[in-house]
Each structure stands twice: as structure tokens, then as C-alpha cells.
Image (cartoon, rainbow, N blue to C red; front, side, top):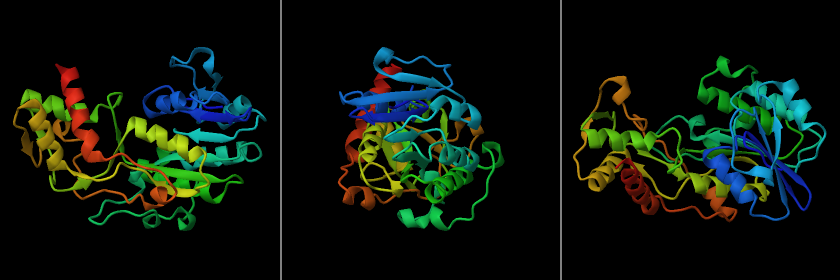
Length: 306
């Protein structure tokens, strides 16, 4: 059973659940799961957003942050895989660890590149090891995004009775990106507005939304556990991103180191932030080449803005 805020998947009458599956790569994950005729997908959401899946999925409604409501919604059903795309705190992770202790065969947490501090060297999973991180509990509002994800990993990977993996995604891009971070750059360049970039030479990892969904799908059938980096092959410097946008739009960017907050780039990192994917590649996953799909995405978004 898979679900959009929480996705639960079942194969051959086993079930999968998913949280956050109504948009972006969560939606793409559900679509990929539904291609398997013997997979049953359950979406757990608060029930506020509509989806296009009709009767092809089962739905549960609960607030992910309300542990009692979550426990009541999922009940005692058994799940092959639980995909959790909206866990942001150790309290939420601890609740999931308790609730799914006897029912989940596998748990996949969507984590983030943000668990790492930026640095010039490429980042390995061992550079943040949740198995040895000091554990403390608390709600989402008690921590920064980085610390909340670090502690959520620590709870699920050290305190759970089920096998668990934490997928560390970088910024996810696509035509369906509701955050519109790449759109920001195109819109600013097209309008001649300044783009604040502290360090044009800093390099960063990305992954495309359909690639992120494919990776989550693959990981659901993989024996990998623990933290797993997942990003497209290759990196781009922030300055290279601007150059590609200039080529596609035919307009020169106004790049400045500092500017008003609304004009600062969402990619405006001061130090490089990129990951090594040897663990996932060694287990058999083949990532897309960033240099091939990124210019195509920029062209598609630029066309949509016209």
C-alpha cells in the first residue's frame, strides 16, 4: 500500500503505505508503484488535497504529527514498505518507530543533503553517522530543518524494530517543482533583476523528480539500510547554472554577491555541497547524468514562462 503523505506499499497482496504522495516526487512514486499490477498502494494524508488516483489507491486520513491519530489510521495492518516523506522531527520518527514496530517489514525515510554541512570535499554517508549522533527528542518547531532531519534519522536507524533506510536527497528539480526554485532564476534573468549568488564557484548536487521517485521505488525492493545518498551523476557550479540560463534565454544575468533577500538565489550557497553515491551505485542503481537533463529542464521551463 502506498500513500501520498505516507505511502504504504503491498506486493502480491502485501501492502505499502506512503506519506506525502499527492504532489511532486511523492506523486511520481505513487504512479510508479501503480504500474505494478500486484502492488496495493495506500496514501496517508490529512485529506485536504485532492489527487488523481481515483479508486486505484486506498486512502487514510490523519495528521502525521498526531501520533494517536496516525496509530488509529494505520491500525494493525501489515506493510511491506512504508515510505515516509514528511518526517521532520525526532518525535515524529519515534512515533513511527512505535506504531509500525510489529507491522512494517521495511521503512524508508526521505531525508536530505541538509544533514551535511557544506564543504569543498564530496560528501560520503559516513560524514554524518546517525548511529553515533547524540539522541534527543522534540517536535519540529524545536529544531532547525537540518537538526530535525539528523535526529529523525538517528531515531529511525537506531531505535526501530524494522529495517530502515534514510534517503539523502539534494534539491529536487522538475517541471512539477512546486517550490519553483529553478523558475526563480529564469524569471529573474528574463526580467533583468539581480540574482544574489555569494559564491558562483560553489558546486552542488541535484536530482530530477522522476529520478527521485524511481530511486525510492528501487530502494523499496533493495536490502540497503542506513543512510543512502541519492543524486544525479555530476555536479554544477552555481555560475554554470546561470550560464546555462543565459544561453537558453538569450539574456545576460545580473549576478551580485549580495542583494535584497527576495533576490537572493535559492541555490546561493557559500560553500560546495555535493554527495558521493557509491553506496547506491554499488547496489545496482543507475543515476541520470546531470549535465544531460539539466539544460533540457531549463529549456522546458523557459518555454513554459513564455
